[in-house]
Image (cartoon, rainbow, N blue to C red; front, top):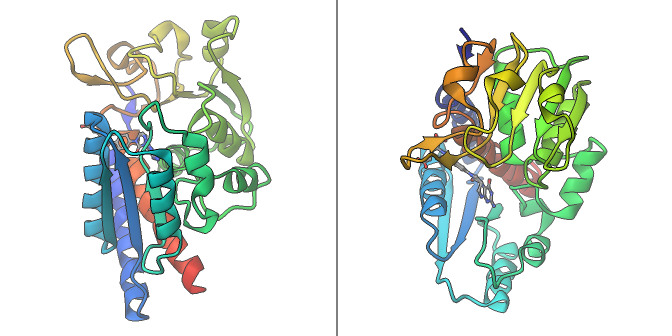
Length: 283
Ligand code: L34
């Protein structure tokens, strides 16, 4: 039986720390502000953005939502980002992804002032992570690391396998594990012997985006299993990339979906926004 790592609990701890620090900043006249941009009507994005606004209120930040219609043009979106870059009360800018297909995500990310880039998606922040000299970590991988730290799991020297190589999760996840001296393997759709490689992992991070992709035969007994996926199963129920029911008995630690990495992503966003406010105030 695995120990469940509750994202609800660990994220509440992080938010409590942020809230406390935020009170300290407010006493100095600094109030962190986050702008969240959402374009179109994706129902999942709506849920996530609502959760982000809720978290802002809980930790004491000001949040502004910019809900733009599906037909928004690239130029309109870039213009909003430029305005927010120059707005002193806004310390963090987040444009919820994915964007509608007619918009250019890369150009949007590049337009955000790196010091307000609380997603850490801008190439300058990505580069800083690569060399280990950063202010912001991407929220989802940072949330996974926070869960690992909270359980005092030592990464050093362990076989770490990340399934998925996205710029947002897989690649930075591998880098953060490497920074803690893990021996890291990144697997993806072209990987040969995926099963065998995963079965060697002491720490297995699933970020594939396919429901129940990680089955029990891919998991080493006693492995730490972190599930980044948020999918809907055949009954429309939320589920992760891990076949939880069958993997759980084999793992030493496992994260649930929902209530796992998702809430951590939001807690780390609060941490980044606090950091942004401090950097911009030189506090
Ligand atoms: N720009 N776009 C940008 N930044 C991000 O960090 C994200 N991400 C991902 C999608 N697009 C983004 C998120 O915010 C995924 N993500 C995210 C955030 C929150 C939750 C899930 C994904 C979350 O709150 N999950 C809950 C359940 C939500 C539900 O009921 O559907 C959970 O318990 O997992």
